[in-house]
Amino acid sequence: MGVYIIAEAGVNHNGNIDLAFKLCDAAKEAGADAVKFQTWKTEKIVTKLADMASYQQDNILNKTQSQFDMLKALELSYDSFIKIKEHCKDIDIEFLSTPDEEESLEFLYKLGLPFIKLGSGEVTNLPYLRKVGSLKTDVILSTGMSYLSEVEIAYRTLLEYGAKSVSLLHCTTNYPCPIDEVNLTAMQTLRNAFKCKVGYSDHTLGIEIPVAAVALGAEIIEKHFTLDQNMDGPDHKASLNPLQLKLMVSSIRNIEKALGDGIKKPNKSELIISEVVLKRIVAKAHINTGDILNENNLTVKRSSEGIKASMWDFVVGHKANMNYEIDDPIKL
Figure 1: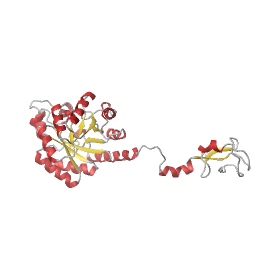
Figure 2: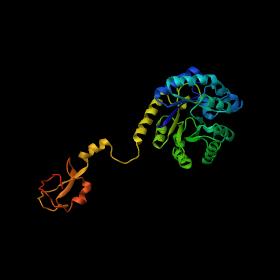
Figure 3: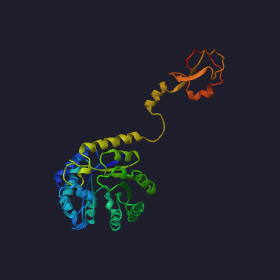
Figure 4: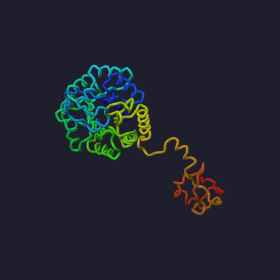
């Protein structure tokens, strides 16, 4: 299987199920493997007086509302997610959603997701990680805002409590993420440290960083997208539009093809070209039958016939078995 591409709809449905359906359609049209949302009960994840993150406040119109009120307006019902999953089945794209608390975790688990995708905010949430692990399913964990030591505890906890496998996504939790904060090679640090499948959850503007991540070996890419970057909401401005998402997917697929199998060998087209490009041994001067072939009467040039230049040491010292004129290919 190639790179698994998750089109992160997140909360860009703005609390509207019809908009969620359209996001699923756009993800399918772009060629993504899955479309992912976020599922929560607001009362279970945030206090009523919690401040908004700076990026949230910057990106919404109502800057005086609390984080609780903002999330409540974006919350979709469980019934809505059942309908969204059915729509995804109808259009043949995998439905995913990140559970942000235990009730939603149990709901999504019973809904039959292929794996549980956890956000970076859960890296240090040991009770929750233990619960997720006990479900004995595959887990993908984003690792923003965390030290390697914290990732190790989370990784070991999930496996210790029963997770079938754990994949790790490097991530910088900032929307949008500045280029100089990406630290993309940390993804390779995760692979080297835990010998697991790794990938990248991207919050930069544009598509170049996730494409670069694939070139560095990412097996999973997660990227936010929206139908309109000018919509009101915390994540729209840092998300791709549908055309950009499609370009990202096609670029990743091209990088996959370009990476190849890692075996250094000429491909079929090169073998054909090599017949007229690689150098061969030819006569540098007139050679008579019986003359000793040497540096004075031999040279190498592009030629459609003759012995390859790599055989130079074998040819030098032999007697010519025929007459040669300048540029005639040498034959033994």
